[in-house]
Structure formats: C-alpha cells, structure tokens
View (tube, rainbow, N blue to C red):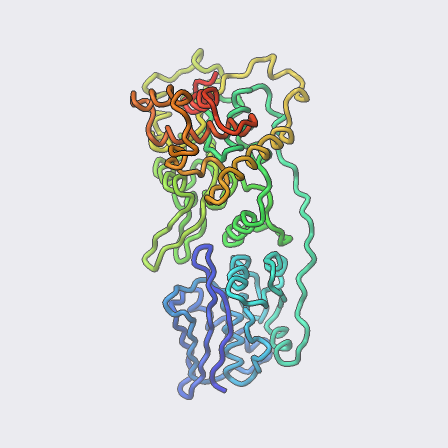
Length: 506
C-alpha cells in the first residue's frame, strides 16, 4: 500500500477544523513534499518526523513522499500535525496497519528522539473533533487532562512515537488521562480590605451586576486599584459554555495551568502600561495569538494608570468593546477571537498625582487637561460607569476592616441581579444588561415611560450626552433595578444611572 490517511485538527483562531493528513509514497528520487498551505513550522516537520521515525526504531521509506493536508485551501499552522504525519508515512509504506486509527484524531509534536511533546490549543482542537462527530482522540501525555475536559469523547495519550506504533501494531494499551484534580486556588483579594469609598463600592457592584465597563478617577491611595482587583471576587462563576470558551483561549495562548480543569473563575488581565497594540488585541506572524482583551473574555481587563498607555493601544480597544470580538486581518486570512470583557480604567487626575489633590498639585490646568485628554472622547463614551473617588479620611482608614462588607455578600446580590437579567433577556442571546442592543430597549415592551426619562432626554437634546451614552444609561438603569429587586426601572434608577455615568454621584 502506498497511500494512507490519518485525521488531525487545525486551528484558525479559536475555531478548529478536522484536517485529513494524506501520505502518498511513489517510486522516484527520495524526497518529501508538503502541500495544503503549511506554515514554516509545518515545512520543518519533514526533518523532525524523519529523525523521530528513525530514532524510534522504524524504517524510513526512501521513496518520493507527498503529504497533503485537506482541506488544501485552509492555512495550517503549528507543529500539532507531526504525529499524524509520522503515522501516515508509516502506514503508507506498509509498516503499520492503520485500521486501529480509523476515525481517530491524532495530535502531537515530535522531538528528534521520538518523544511526543505537548502543543497549544488542544482543548479547542478536541472540541472541534467532537463537533465533527468523532469520538476518539490521541494526544500528548501532558495534554491528556486538558483534552479530557471535553465531554462525549474518549481520550488516550502517548509519550513517544514508539508507544503509538506498538498500539497500532500489537494493541498495546495507551496512557489513560489522569483523574481530575480539584484546584483549590487562593480566594483572591476581598472587598472587606477596602476602607470607605461607598461610591466606589456601589459603582463596582453596578458594573458587576450588569457587565458594564468602569472608569475610576481620583487621587493616589483612594482605592482605585484595590477596587478594580476585587471586581472578579464579586462576579459569578462561569457556566459550562463560558468556561469552555475561556479555557480554550488560554489553551491557545499556552497559559492554561496544570491540572486540565476548566477555568471557572472570571479571568483578570492587568497588562503593563507599556503594552503594545498586538499584546492588547492580539497579533503575531502566522496564526495571530489572542491578546489581553481576549484572554480577559468573560472576565476583567484592567488598565491601571490608563493615560500612560499609548494612544494607539487605547484606541484599538474601541472596536472590541463595541462588538465583543476581535478580527485580526492577515494576508493569508483573518483570525477572530471573542472579547466579551469588562474594561476597567483607573487614572489619577494629573501627572504629578499629589496625594492631597488640588491643595499641593504642581500641574497647570493645561497639563491636567492634556493628561486626562489622553483618554479620548470616543473611548470614554463606551465606558458606562465613570466615577471620581474622593481622598480617604483618617477616620475611614483607621476603622476596623470587619465593618466593611465582604465580597461574598456583594456577590450574592450580583448573582441575583444577573439571574433576573438573564431570565428577562432569555432567547435574545444576551447574558447581561450591557449586551442588550439599544433599539430593543427603546421599543415596547421595554421602553421606559417619558416621565422616568425626562432628564435623560433633556441631556440628549442639549448635546451633553451622545446617543450611545443614552442607551448605556438605560442599560444601567435596568441593572440598578435588578439590584434593588424591581421588575422595571423608575425615575430614581434612571437618575442614579445618570449620576454614575456623569461622575457626579457624590
């Protein structure tokens, strides 16, 4: 037999596609050709696979070898095809009967000594195989726990090419995935650690309940960073669908922790202010990697001292914030990653950032305007909650922290509010109030009466509020009502939403 076929999976962004690895061995000068839009890593697979086959005690076929990766029109990236290529070659040369690998997906990178090394993105690859109706996969041993997370598919692992050859040839058992180990990670920071700042706490609770973006302004030491870091502690755990999305993104980025468990806690990303556009929204040669805004999908993206970020980096976030996804266009095709995240900005009022604020500030009014002007109007227009925190007083700082409400109590109210919103918008595809389209809220039966929106309409007519801001305030009013246990917002809810949006809630 001079032809063999083995199944593998290729990734384009977070979406996986089943790939057929075909091997044809024909008489002629010994050579190996790879077709099907392979990248550089795949072109180099010919040398890795040859060394691995020989060092595993198998005979290399000295014939003209043609490898084809179907579908040929889809770009192929990475080294996850190595193991499938090696098995297809041995099957085409007659060394291996491939009946045992019928409708089995084979994934793994090969070392020169024949060891099978882990690869990135195994979770979305196995999920793609399950969606295609396949029921068995073979993965590297270090990826077995991760692959076993996907329901409805049988996972087996290999650590060497020799082990896989023995399984195909003699039926030698493969490695079983390890039993899942519950991850008891640290609880994280608690809201009880934050002294005072009732306004900041309320803004944080509203943002968490409705999935709204948040901007915190104020002097240093007011608690902006502490509040932002505690936002994940009051967010509900991710459901199965969201956990699978988040875990798949971290798998592609190579950031999945050991243990192979789904990530149930909302992720928290806090990039440094020197972060580039590519690190924030994603990029890189070949297969573009997810950036911080995608790694924070269903979680929090925190930009501390936001005016210190490059203007291009900040402006690149506008489209992901609006649409909840990132489309990275490349000459060989586009890559799309989900980016449904909550953005939290924190900023001092001026460059000198004196603790006492206006009293000892050394900055001119022009310097102050220029500093906060680095946050453009179109970007801030997409931030629902914008509040200015007052400086802390000694009495607030010295009070016992046990008097402050802990994260667990706030999380209970947030969870109840999110359940109310999810029931209301069931069937629309919206999980939280911040995702509801504005036109839906302006039409019956969700349209609020004119008496409750009179002040809001006046701000829109006077030009002090944009149409986008109008819709965002309406969404926040629904969130305030959900937190307070009401079926619909009334004028007080709209007024509080206006205050949280304009920053004059004090």
